[in-house]
Image (cartoon, rainbow, N blue to C red):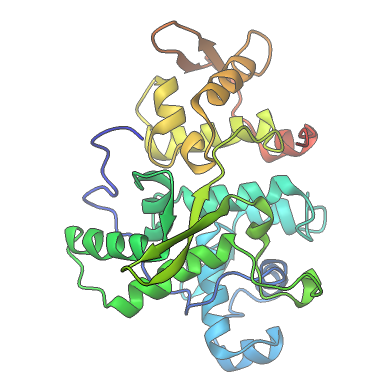
Length: 317
């Protein structure tokens, strides 16, 4: 990570709650899209939403949280307004209305992990500021408590514990092999295998805890078009006044594609050389250097779109 980078800017408020302790489940987002499209006030009456969506009151609140956190809808006058991103994915001619494409899952992970407004603390801290190659639940929870105090909060241990568990549950499976996706309590991002168990460690001298590590390796299922799309969003959201980005920023800056996707720096360099090659895209130029590569935007170039993302088939590992 880039040394000295702050976990949040002075005007930014990270969220520790709102998910009602539920990780986003597999069928929730398509169901929420259809409900909001039919009625922007679908979540305003929780009792009616419980009946229409077939879930409990706390799950209704959780689903509204995840719809906003993944960038599918924005609050407007008490209702929810679907975003262009939501329509592009789940609409009548959407690219992936049933979440069957791995590119969509990586996009949802990107949206969830790179929010500038209303970002989630666990995602911001663990993906961008965790300083070790491995983590256990108790280690992460202790760090959550310290960081919460640094940010001026007084969260209870229960709030921090629940927030951490929602993060872990988002990326780690809980279902047995005999349970199908539709009946699973797991969420779609489990399929990314981003957080992997690597063993166990004795904690407090007596009990054992699972040890996890982020899968930091090249991920060919993340296509170059998807990577370019995320660079463009990162640039707009976190570096709007900059005329160029360094390789180090794209690879290691908080909320950068390299950090969010946990890509090795060499892989980020190779990707930049491809997407910034002459004639490769209308968006970027990349100048390689033995010291530090530099990415710039093509003058008058067109920013990458979701249509670009879904028109280029990813490789598979």
